Amino acid sequence: MSIVAQLIANGIIAGSIYALVALGYTMVYGILKFINFAHGEVYMLGAYFAYVLAKVYHVPIVAAFIISMILCAIVGVIIERVAYRPLRKSTRLAPLITAIALSIFLQSLALLVWGSEIRTFRTGEISKGHNILGAIVTDTQLMIIATTIVLMLLLWLFIKKTKLGKAMRATADNLEVAKLIGINTDRVIATVFAIGSALAAAGGILIGIEQNLEPTMGVTIGIKAFTATVVGGIGNIWGAVVGALLIGLVENIGIWFIPSGYKDAIAFVILVIMLIFKPSGIFGSGREEDIRAQGE
Image (cartoon, rainbow, N blue to C red; front, side, top):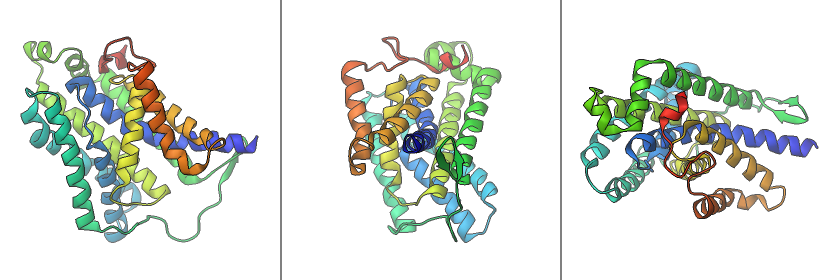
């Protein structure tokens, strides 16, 4: 039973990271109806920004965490303004190709700036974990779960309670009608990219503290987070969270039955199954769910 408990704990921790990245995917899709496949690279940049601040400039890790989220929010706004906004009236294929090109560009830029060697936040001995219901969980892993919960709660409050959050829900419901009633949709879209990018950065920093950093670290997480949005119902915020937790649990429990080397392939299999049998996702209703569902 301790093995089962450990696998479940690992799944929740992994799912927490996937959720932070998946939220960016689903928020952008909820408004613009396309997938920003460069989102995983923003996750990677967040980890590297925090690494430089903490290890090179000796900024306290909490301050480095916040500054990196802000920097990635700015990167997200720039990406939207430069790469995606000019393509809004084009076919859906154009922003998709642009997103893939942007992903490759950001990976190459990270390789050029930081090199290909693996980096880590960790120094000294690894701290002992706590026994929680038979699972060994470290302080860092508890911090990952707690931080994810806090960030998702703040996102919920922002979308449900603030004027800009209500504007986001209205824009997601109908972009053209939102323009007609006076909502600055450009500002709303930029805000969505900023929030999504900041959350992705948080996920990158948290996993960087727990594991290692490398320029391609956003590729696999991007696919898993995208799978989470499909499983939960793309465009549905809480669906992305539930889908992320399910992916984390399934892939970690799955290695009890298959070799651990196939762990990353589990997300691909789930993605194919969902696209074939239920492309609208668990919380889908036969049409794209939107951010407005978050506040209802």
